[in-house]
Every structure is written in C-alpha cells, then in structure tokens.
Amino acid sequence: MAIPNTRQKLIDYCLRALGHPVIEVNVDDDQIEDRVDEAIQFYQEFHSDAVVRNLLKHQVTQTDIDNGYISLAAGANILSINNVFNISNTNSGTSLFSVDYQLHMNDIFDLNGSFGGIVNYELTKQYLSLIDRNVNGVYEMIQYSRHKSRVNFHTDTLKDLGVGNYVVFDGYSVIDPETFSGVYDDMFLKKYVTALVKRQWGVNLIKFEGMVLPGGVTMNGRAIYDDAIADIEKLEEKIRLEHELPPLDFIG
Image 1: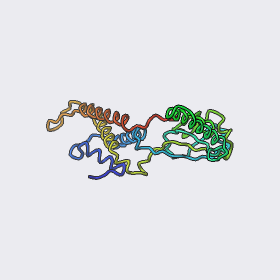
Image 2 (image 1 turned 30 degrees about the horizontal axis):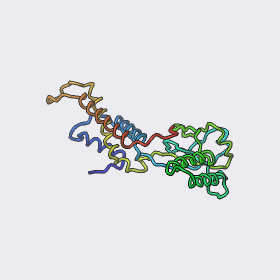
Image 3 (image 1 turned 90 degrees about the vertical axis):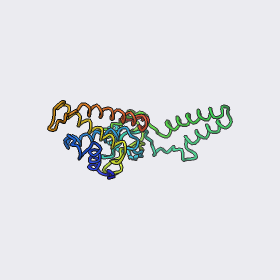
Image 4 (image 1 turned 30 degrees about the vertical axis):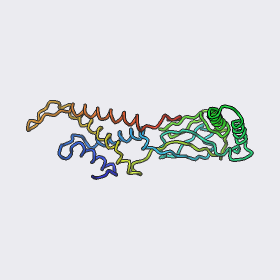
C-alpha cells in the first residue's frame, strides 16, 4: 500500500478509496483541492495530533507598549495562547530572598503545622497558584487574535514591564503537513478527505438525478451524497469526542 506523504498522494489515495480508476469519480481537480484544504483546516482546528505546544519568547519594545499589543512572528501558525509569563521579573521565585519565594515558604510551613491533611494541601496549592499569578506575572487580561497573529493586552501590563524585558507565550501552534509529511498519512485525515470528496461527487451528480446513461446505468447522486453526509457526521463526532483538546483560555 502506498503511504501518502504528500498532498497529491493523499488525493490519489482518497480517489482510489472511492473506486478510481475502476469507477470514474466525477469531481473536478479544483474541487478536490478545495476539499483537501477544508479537511486540513478542520483537522488542525480540532485534532490534538495536529498541534504542538510551544513557548515563544518576546522582548518588549516601545512599539509594543504604544500599540498595546504584541505581534507574533509571521508564519508561526499559532492556534491559541494559554498563558503569558514575565521572565524578567526580579522577584522571580528562584531567589531565596524574593517576595514570592518567602510567601511560598510561609504557606508551606503553615501547611505542615495545620489541620486538614490532603484537603488543606489542595487548597494551599490553589492559593500558591494565585500567588504566582499576582507576583510572577501571569497575565489573564489578554486576547489573542489568530488571524491578526496578535496578542492584545487590556491593561497597562506592557507599560509596567518596560522596554527590553521579556514575556513568554505558552500556546499551541499548528503542524504544517508540508514540513511534517506524516500528517498526510493520518487515519482521520484520510477518511475525512475521502468523505468530503465523496460528498462533492454526490453534489455534482444530483443535478443529473435519474438520467440514464448508455448501457442502462442510472445516476444516483443522492445516494452518494447521503452516504457521504453520514460518514462526515460520524468522523466529526469522533474527533470532537476522542481527539479534541480541552477548551483553552485565550483562543483567538
């Protein structure tokens, strides 16, 4: 079996799955390209295997402060931003004399000598997380615009950071199949492209419904279309239930 490792090989695989070359699949090349684009877009939007978690470092400039937003690198293909961290804070918890280190130590000491056991431990963890957000610079008042590739800050955070300091964006970026060709051999993507092309085939034939071809063959585009819709619904339900990432905080 030929393993699809390019866009064209994926298309060839899907056409064979529909019966080509034994059966003529009445779909134009441009229509097939559109359906492949549609399938890849859906795959990248919802399938956990289509994204990778990244940390992106950015040095704050005066332009960032004036704009109130940070533009991410072109071509970064960032799907979402989960968190933003300030790594230039001089109060960072790696120092024995830092503010947050002392706060952490006080809370851990209280945990050892207080009641509650595991319940108090869990409450303390949540409280320490709250300290991190307020002391170490984890920012919640942001909005990521995916199509603009821009992170908007709704407070004076950038001004407070100052020029030359760094922030780190914790987010997910889309895996480019042209760079990582194994994407083309993903089982879901192959089935989904096949189903979308099959739906297009049915749409094309519906207008000729009932037409009798030479040899007495009758076109039945409606049956092909209905069968494709059923396949698509099953695949989309499966990906949303089994492969979709949990909701993220700052999806653009």
